[in-house]
Amino acid sequence: MGREAASAFGRWFVLENFPVKVELVAVCDLQEKLLDWFRQIPTVKLLTKDHQELLRSPDVDVVYVAVPHNLHEKMYLDVLAAGKDLLAEKPFGIDLAAAEKIAGAVKSSGRFVRCSSEFPFLPGPQRVMQIAQSGKLGKVLEIRSGFWHASDLDPNKPVNWKRQVKTCGEIGVMGDLGMHAVHVPFRLGWKPARVYAQLQKIYTQRPDGKGGMAVCDTWDNAMLHTEVNIGGDEVPMRLEMKRLAPGETNTWYLEVLGTDGGARYSTKEPKTLWTFERQKEQIWQRVDLGHYGPFPTITGGIFEPGFPDCFLQMWAAYAAERAGALGNRFGCVTPEEAVLSHRVFAAALESQRTKAAVAVDAR
Ligand SMILES: NC(=O)c1ccc[n+]([C@@H]2O[C@H](COP(=O)([O-])OP(=O)(O)OC[C@H]3O[C@@H](n4cnc5c(N)ncnc54)[C@H](O)[C@@H]3O)[C@@H](O)[C@H]2O)c1
Image (tube, rainbow, N blue to C red; front, side, top):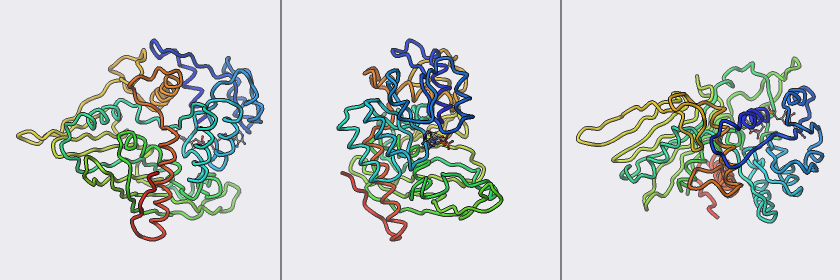
C-alpha cells in the first residue's frame, strides 16, 4: 500500500485548484527491494529501515503507516510522540484495546489523524450517500454494505501475515475488510445497536512457501447482521466481509432500500449506479457515472474511475481536511469511527462465541 500512496502523490498535479501540495520525501520499509523501488521517485530524500529515523526527519509532516496489524499500535503511537500527523491504515490497531489506546494518544497529542478507507470517494458511493440523505427513500427498509475478495478460494495460495491471529488479530477478516464496509454507514449515522455474527474459518492451513504447511487461524468470512436506528425505527443492516466470495476479486458494494426510493452501487460495475423510485410503476434505473469525485481533477468527465483514483481522492480529503479546506465534502474515517468499528467487531466475536445477538458498546 506504500507504493499505492506514492502513486497518488506522484500525480498530485491532476487535482484542480487544490489548496495543498503534497510530496513524498521519506520512506521506511524493511525490504531492500522495496526501498530500491522508491529510489525512482525524485522527491524522496530519505530511505531507511528504521521508522524512528524517518520520524526524526524535520522534512516529514505527515506519516502514512501501512504495516501488519500487530505493528499498528506501536508505530501509530511513535508517530504521534514524534509530533507528526498520521494517516493510519485500517483496522486502527489490532483490537479494541489498541484502538482505544491510540485514540487516547490522538486526543492528548492534538495531532491530525484519520484512517484509510478509499472506496466511498468513488462517484457511485458519493451518489448513494446523496440519495440516502435526500429524504427521498421514504421509510428505510434495509441496508447492505460489504467488501468481498476471492483469491483465498485457492487452497494453494501461500500463507501470509493476514491469515494468522498473531499478526492480523483475532478479528481476522473484519480487521482486513471491515472498515471499508462501515465507513459510509457510520458517516450517515447508521451505528449498530446490536450484532449477530456468523464468522467462518474455511481453510485452516496453507502452504508456508517453504515446502510445508502453516496454520491459518483467522476468521475468513464474516456476516454481521446488525440493527440501526433510523428515525425511531429499528432497521436491519447487513455488513459482509469475505475473503472467500466466489468470483469477487475486490468487490465493494452498498445498497440502501426504502419504501419510496433506493440506491445500489458495486465496484463490480464501476461506472453503474442503480436507483429505485416508486411512482405509479416501480422503476429501477441505471445510470452511467462519469469521473466526478469530491475533488475535481483534469480527467475528462466521461472517463471511468478506478482504484488509484479513489485512493488519490482519499488522500486529497485527508490533505484538505488537515488544511481546514474540506468544506462540506466527505472526509476520511475519524479516530472515533475507527474505535466504533472495533466495538462492532468485538461484539461480533462475542456473538460468535455465544451464538446470540450482542449489544454494541455505544460509548
Ligand atoms: N486501504 C486499502 O485498500 C488496503 C489494502 C490492502 C492493505 N491495507 C492495509 O495496509 C496495511 C499493510 O497491508 P499491505 O497489504 O500493504 O501489507 P504488505 O505485507 O504488502 O506490506 C507491509 C509492509 O510493511 C513492511 N514492514 C513490516 N514491518 C516493518 C517495520 N518494522 N518497519 C518498516 N516496515 C515494515 C513490510 O516489509 C511490507 O513491505 C494493513 O494495515 C492492511 O490492512 C489497506
